[in-house]
Image (cartoon, rainbow, N blue to C red; front, side, top):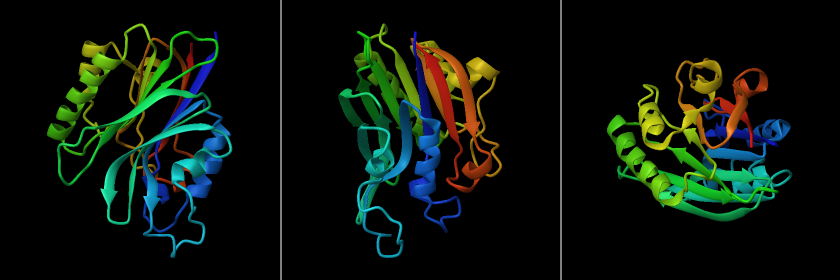
Amino acid sequence: MSDLKVVTYNIHKGFNAGNQRFVLGAMRELLEQEHADVVFLQEIHGATERYKRKRANFPDVPHFEYLADRLWPHYAYGKNAIYKKGHHGNAILSKYPFKFWENIDISNNPYASRSILHGVLELPGRAAPLHTLCVHLGLFEGERKRQLDILIDRIERHVPHEEPLLIAGDFNDWKSRVEGRFKQDLGLKELFVELTGRHARTFPAWFPVLPMDRIYSRGIAPTSCACLSDGPWRNLSDHAALTGTYAF
């Protein structure tokens, strides 16, 4: 049996909560210190021309490549917001190779594009692949309900029940409406609920009161969890990061 460590983090496009400082470099340092096997990222730039002239420390490469560069040789990126001077979306960084990945558009609001990034990872010594889904759901409850329908249908059609599954990201689900359907329809368990009895509070990062970010799983056993909201993490994104370890 081996351990698999994961992190999920809404990086707020690399800026601090007040949008005054570009802190992607500090985010990279802290993420690397976690030594996660798989990292789920939301609100990450794939391309942008807006800030390059104003920010001396702005990378010339896509930000998911910049974060992945020194520790995660494999990555996938899916656009979910496209605008005149660039785009941002979700990314999965991995120490293990992708067998397959696909970005699925779940937008149902013309003013807020959303997607699911589904990556299938080949794990060493394992016959069955690991399915990883990075999500960022909408701000409105009706919007999230329709997006959840698409997400559940995707999993039922494309993820065999005997293959392990991880879903992580920013669910914008402060009322915990996702929980019942995930448990009933898919047999999923949430990391912090399973180990601590309650969801981790992740927003806003400087004084977390809302449980916006989650890590759900099926087919692997959770062994530890932590909410990264103290110390230097507190001064970065508007969301706290979550980390968890699984036995597989």
